[in-house]
Length: 626
Image (cartoon, rainbow, N blue to C red; front, side):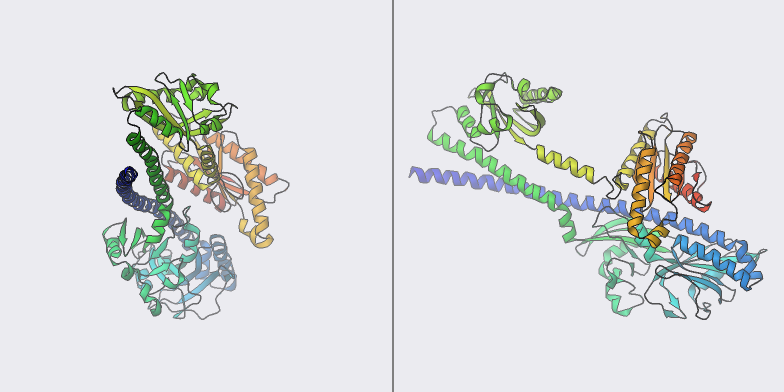
């Protein structure tokens, strides 16, 4: 009967604590899912803001190219005298733009009635070629009416369409966006210059994300996919069989949000839909979208959920480890001291346990403690714990723990310890004060769990996540962290010495890949990275931020000093024996505005490229770059 009663009491206690712990951790689980949804949405919004900024910057560059081409003397000569000589010169000019930029599928010249006078096509696989098809009549195309309505100094943009040839869709299907402008000679309009932008190629180059789940889709103004990693969803407005994938039908509530706000997120049809609107001219509005299914959201939180489950099980086991023995001891041995029985229960646990008196002198340790620290019980009995196993550098933490014990009777935290063999380990330490019947502390029970291996693994994984795999220098993620750090210093301490930001790009790198293969391209990138690293100062920061592009942060460096350093790098690469490449470098003075600083450096790099390559160009942060 007594055994049945004891078993019943233990069962009731177990069920009670199991229900209590389950209720508490279920609430934490719901909070964890809500936090994961919020953090996923914020991360996706940040990714879309970055992608939008990349598109906007590229769009500005394309408008500049359009202006340069429409005012170019070569085009004027061809319009006035359309002979073979001027046509060849115009072909060379446009071919150079198509080959170097790669963003366009076609550059064409229309007369005032909408007929093509001349065009040059570009295909990523074929290269530049002159169309053999008859000249097209686009006078009935809606975009031509928009072009006719432009003033002479204006530029137009037409939304994404599939590229056509003689009124028929061109295969393979290529989504393009047209930018165009009137061409004038002596203030007299003579035609229109039209450039078709390859939206798919732009997306492949600009949709960079360090997060694998973030696949950026592009939706047009009518709610159809124009860019997606799922090809079957594309071009539903042109291909009737794909109408079912219309975004506005799949996510109707989210689609309503698109017209109400610039950016945001919405939980629609069991998916998290995050969006940002990209406006390129009056007819060029597009929606950048990241949608994450319930499975993807759960996968992002799976590690945290697993840790929560482990924590709940550990808490339950720990509670049972203490509660069940204590209950058993209390029922069978009421005459014995509760404090001593708690100590025995602790010593029978699975972790290293140390019992110390109120002066923090060691009374007893268990076998796990002896194995962890290399001491036996007789060696350390009566000695102060903080003099024996804790590092002198962490004594402040230990003293803080003792002070906390005086107030709350319990303390838990992470601390470094030293073994008998002078090895340093990291442990989770839990200290519990045990009181007697008078309410005074009799002794302390300290448990320690060795987490050294886990801490080392975390540090190694963090280091690997910030290194570029090919060159073993810092990657873009680390660069953005350092750039923000230096910008924050400049914002917090305006008197901080000048710092400079530089972008380095290998000239004609595509030619190396095309003519000598990607293995040689990889070797060149590694060699350039190594040479840059050797030639820079110890205080400078170097990272690979793109395929053949590197970034350098030079703290405490003036513009003139930075120019000297960068020219030295350029010359070192030019004269390197095992390299047959040159680099173009653009730099600027770093400010608290990281976006503007990067844009200034990028503009300077573009200037260096446009001015003949193998040179260093400067764009001051206060220059007008609009």
